[in-house]
Image (cartoon, rainbow, N blue to C red; front, side, top):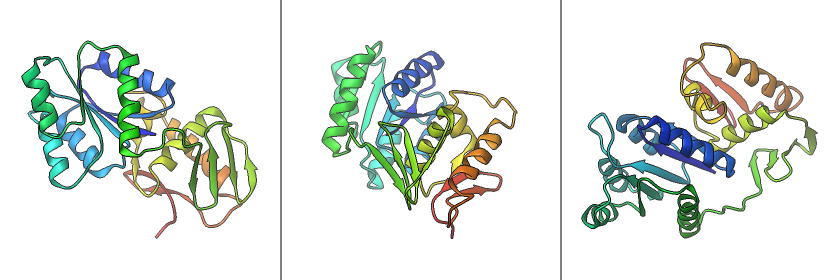
Length: 226
């Protein structure tokens, strides 16, 4: 289940993303309001975790206002060191769905995420992801296409899961590095290209049509081409 984290504090990001991934979620990080607004508006997220105060002048509440004006109803959990009653009420009235003050316990954050996902009708217990005739069983980590089993290494499965959760969208190298490799910098290696090539050989080489596509200069997309 894809979650967007918009937060500029590196320690908080590491804590959040590590905990979310260990809990079975897919976490993508935006470090400032401009990037956060772009990803929030163009991505397909089950939930957004948003800091109130961001470093580039685009604060969390302005992001929420922009999303709500365009009809985007993605649940937003606000994180903030602003803990007064007035600030909490303001955050909710501006369109936030929940408000959690810093510092926070991860167990409470997780419980609030579960409540928001239930409220929005998102199925937390979804056990299968599909695109065309490609199926991923998230509980057994089994992959098959056209009824044929495909053996994937753990990293390959994680990469495929992220792509399928964002099917039809272009996924950038930065998104893959942060969400699949947990890198918050580009190591300037061909690690992504190698893994994509291996994954493509396994899910596309013996099947038709091809599902995994390279968008030159941008990233990758899974789905029907055209």
